[in-house]
Length: 91
Image 1 (tube, rainbow, N blue to C red):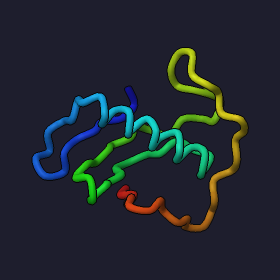
Image 2: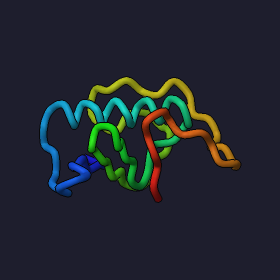
Image 3: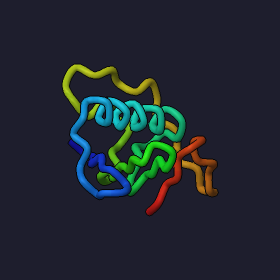
C-alpha cells in the first residue's frame, strides 16, 4: 500500500473498506487527470478524511496485480494546476 488514510480530527488510521475504496479511486482519478500519481497529503475537509500518498510512481501501468494499465502517460504541468473540487493538496 502506497498511501495512508486517516481521520483528520483524531489522527487515527481509517481501515474501513469505504476509506480505502475512496483513496484508491481518488488516486486513479488524480492519475487520469494529471498524468502522475498523487504525492504528499491530500485533505478532504468535508469528509474529515486525509490521505498521505507515497512517492510518485512512473506512468507505466498499475501498482497492484491484475489492475488495468493507464492508457497513456502525459507530462506534468510546469505551472500550478487547479485542484479537484473539495480537495486540497498539501505538500
